[in-house]
Structures are given as structure tokens and as C-alpha cells.
Image (cartoon, rainbow, N blue to C red; front, side):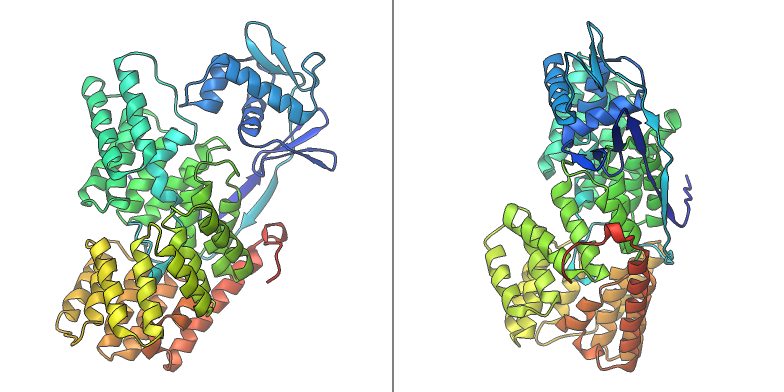
Length: 535
């Protein structure tokens, strides 16, 4: 199935008037005149759901399914949340102005909400040619501080859009499968997949199980370095669900994840766009995934706008902060980026992604002593393989090639399935043998021929050509990465891996091309979305 989408994304601000309240769904804000009310999290989701139901009396079951699902809660939980929402709005249940109780039925808005004229903002950006890999190789050579997509297999469980399952054998199996999928560990992902398959054996048309299994299969590849064949199965399951339910946004989300993991990012972007268009406003999973892919393509203004639209209480907010920080970093707002990186590093010591993102941000700014200090602290925590690559680069800056080699070896041991780490290990062995380089260059060309045309592949090619002494060709490879959306000029200027290319006149042109592209993207960021911190 082919998906096509517009070259630019239109961001609609969905706003409603409820008596004297103005409610902005995309910004998740409630105002009374100039006063911004403290309505967030579940309270805002509850209000947003009722706005979409207009003047209907909304039953307890409908509220539980629309706001809390797949969590199982009772009517008392709904009643307590209604009380909290009323308190935030300044409403009185005995003489309601905004929400009234309908005895024995549920709740209803006192007045009919009025949809306000949409504020339509369009963020345009040049689409770059080529395709990028979705294999979640979050490495320094093409680092994007984004890992929210790593939790995609659990989004449909934790993001609140799945119909609750009826009691009974299959419902109980699905509840267990969702639970294991939401934990996010390899063995639990396998348990979830087995349970989804068990449900499908009994009910082959069960869409919930089809999509759960699709996410689990994609996660085997994107998160756990499994064989790529699983993404083909994941795509097939998503397409089968779409055949029966073409407007099921979770099915489009599952399809996007499978395509992304297979490296078919053009199609993945279109699938995620369709998911975004169909999903309720409080569902942010596909928006976060789409933002990641747009950033990979160099469409930083669009990515920033999407990441800023993720609600503060979103279960993936921890990861979204890293993705947002990376957007700021690439757009030239280092102070805003560092604030988010440092906060994540301080608050989440077990987050292996922030444990490399924060020291790397200092490294990119040339603050090497601080980067080494933070890197040492991170070394006592769970770390991503990119941690060892960064440690190796820091060692090279100090002239310690032996320690760099040891670090690259640890990166390779941590993720032996990633050929990039094998490339680093081979390039820095002593003595170095280069007879393998043509074979690796051929493998990169084969990947691109199959549609996996990530900027990281071109960066690796630049390193290989640099090792062969083919400086002009190596710089051409860097330019190819830029043409495909690569925007990290700071890394090219700082990393010792590219030191031999920096004296070439053409290298300066590559940096200038990145600067021009980033300047264009900065101009596309509306003033209200720019960080309010000193630069």
C-alpha cells in the first residue's frame, strides 16, 4: 500500500468557547479572559472529551472508554475527577455553570460549546530527497535525541485510545498482553507477542490483538535488534487491520512504525500523518514519531511545533524532552537545549538516553572538561552504546588512541548487530588493515539501493573514504548526508572522527549549506514557539 502526503504540515489550533471560558485543545490551555486556569492532565483530557461530545449526556462508560481506557476504573474515579475539574474551573456542582450531573446517566455540559474560528498556522519546509533509516540507531554520527518512538509498542496501551476489552478469556488475555507490552523490556515484549498470537488463534479478526502484535513485532527490530523479517509481519498485520477499519488511527500508527523500522521513511511519514489526522487531540504518539522523522529530514520547524504540542502529562514526556532538546540544539538554541538535557539527566538517572545526550551536548559546545565530568557520572549509570562512542571521541581529543579503541570495542560489544560500531573498531585498530573498506562501501550502497538512504549511512561512508585518503569523495558523502536532512554542523566541526576533512575547502561549503538550511528553519519558527531563554 502506497501512502502519499503533503509536503508541508498544517497545524490547526482547535479552540472552543464554553460560556466565559476559551479552551485551546492543541495548546491544552483554558482561559477565562486573560487568566490562564490550572487545568491539565486527566482533567484537561476529560474536558476535551466532553467538548467533542457537545451537548450530549455522556455516560460513565463512555467517559471511562474515552478518557481512561485501557485502564480499568470505576464510576467513583470519574466522579472524583469531575470534582477536580470543577474546582479548577471554579464551578459549583450545586449550581453548575459548566458541567452538570445527570442522575443515573453521567454528565453534560451546561451550555453548548461553540467552535471558534481555527487559527491556522502553516510551517513550510523544503523536503529533502532520499529516505532515512528507522532502525533506531541512536548513535553520535547521526544523533537525534529522540527515543519516544522506542516506546511505540506501548503507546497504544498507555496513550489512552484503545477500547476496553469485555470480560472473558480473550479480554483477560489482551489485558495481560497490554500489560507486558507496556513494561518495555525484551522478555516482556516476547510475552506480549505470545499472548496476542494466542488471542488471534481464537479470534483471527481481533483488531486489538492484530495491532498489539504488529507493535510487538516492530519493537523486536527497532528496540531489540531483531531480524528485519519481523517488520514485514508487523506491516502485514497493520494492513490487515486497515482493511477492516480504514480510519483506525492506531492501525496507521502501527503501519508507520513498521515502515519506519524497515527504513521506508517516506511511506512511514505519510502513515503517521494519517494517524495524526485521525487521532484524538490528546493522543500524541504518532505526532512524536512524525516529529522525529521530520527532524531527520531537516524539517526542524515542523518537528519543533509537533514536539511542543505534546502534553505535559504524556507518559512519553520524559523522552519527548530529549527530542525537543535536540530540536533546539539543531536550531541554534543551545541554552534551551541544555536546560532540558540537564533536567532529564538530573531527574532520570536510569534513562540511558539522557545519560549520553547531556554530556554530548556539552561536547558539541566545546566544553570538554564539563563533558568529561558529566560523562564520568553517567558511566556509573545505565548507558546506551553511543555512550562508549562518545567516550572514545573524548579519548581521541586527548590523544589517547588506545583508550579510544577500548571504548569503541565496548560500543561494538554492546550492539554487535550495528555495523557502524564495527567500522569504528576497525578504523582505530593498530595496525589498521583497510582491505575490508571496499566491501563495507559496497554494503552501504546495497542498503541505499534497497531504500535505506539514511544520512548516517553517508556519514559512515565519509569516514571510510577519509581512511582511504579520498578526501574530495569523503566531503561529497558529507554533502549527501546534508542533502538528506543532516543538520549537525557542530558535530562535524568538533568530532575528531572527521578531523582530516576539515582542512578541505569543500568542507567549509558543507558547513555553510547546513547553516543556510538551519537559518531557513529558524525563520519558520513562530515567535511564540521560540525558547524564552538567553542564547
